[in-house]
Amino acid sequence: MLERKTVLGMAAMLLIGLLMTTPSLSEEQQRGQREQRGDRQGQRGQRRDRQGQRGQGGGQGQQGQRSQGRSDAERMQERLGATAAEWKVLGPRVMKVSELSRQLRGGGRGNQRGGSRGGRPDSQQNAPARQPSAIEVAQEQLRILLDNTSATPDQIKQRIAALRTARKQVQQQLVIAQKNLIQIVTVRQEAQLLMMGLLD
Image 1: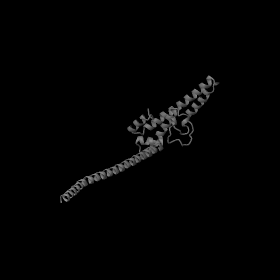
Image 2: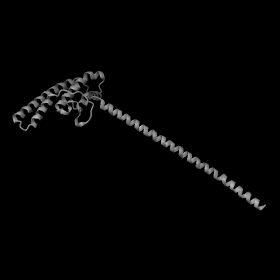
Image 3: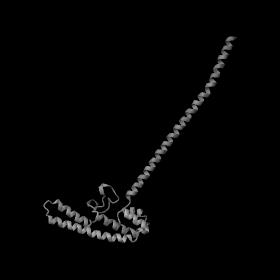
Image 4: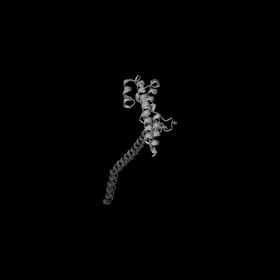
């Protein structure tokens, strides 16, 4: 009889122990499930971040390409804040001053085919070849003569005079072009042109 009571008591204790441990196991399972859900959400968030970054990078790249693809005239129009109708009148005068200013700075052989200075790519790389200016012709003739070690001082002086004459002529044309331009610009546009070095 005593043994039966002992067995029953042990069985009851085991049953109580199982009942007490079951909630703890359930809590651990719940924690594990919560952690798994958190990991999945974190991974989804990281994927969204990466996709967003790629999208932003692509947008910036497209903007950069559009910026590089614009012509000098389009960039000047935007900087001066001119409408399409205004630019029809303003544009030719601005580009005339820009071209004469470029010639007066020397231009150089690298720009005769619309290339860029310093080897940087620009929107004019594929532009058709243009006729060199009088200054560029005079510069090239003087450069060739200087490469000739047998050239006389008189010959060099003649080329120097030709270059100075060409520069003087372009300078006179630039003064007239600047006067024609300043007559039709606003004060804000005049300030922008001054900052761009197209007006004195």
